[in-house]
Image 1: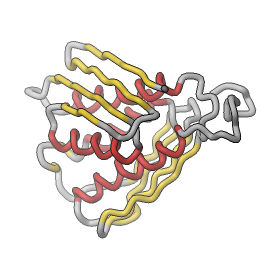
Image 2 (image 1 turned 60 degrees about the horizontal axis):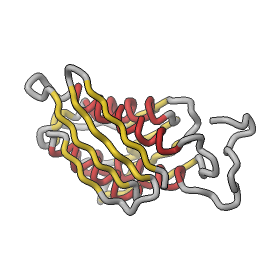
Image 3 (image 1 turned 90 degrees about the vertical axis):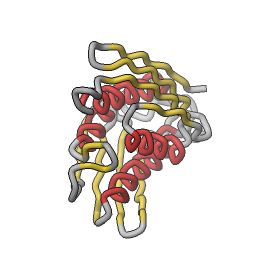
Length: 195
């Protein structure tokens, strides 16, 4: 099985994450930010990646460190579980509707981190989560996962639906990209021979 555990401890956060890329979408998530928990749970369930994420952060200051560091650690765990990426599909794309909202996600497990994020919110918070932290979460995840990530809300009005459709679109695209392609055998999906 393709699994990895990452422990990230700083003066700002203490994080333990375990992922199983060949899971069933089981999750145990506790970040101290209820709405972020809900989003990571959506990511797990719809990608079929098992995620255990326990985060203790300096929420008495604000959410920035908790959101950023949890995304960095999750991306690192995914990259570690992928190993040398032999046999993976590599690319993934998905559209995720949620009522009036539609989000598109296209990604490449390229080893070249980059994020294009196009979405916006009409209110500053969802539950207790600052909406300005969503782009930062996606950029941080892409950075340590080593993926090129394009995520765009094509249209939508309800802020909860916009956020949730982004995580579901990422989940479905990630599920495609990490899958083992039986036609590739043990090959690394690059003409360079390395990702």
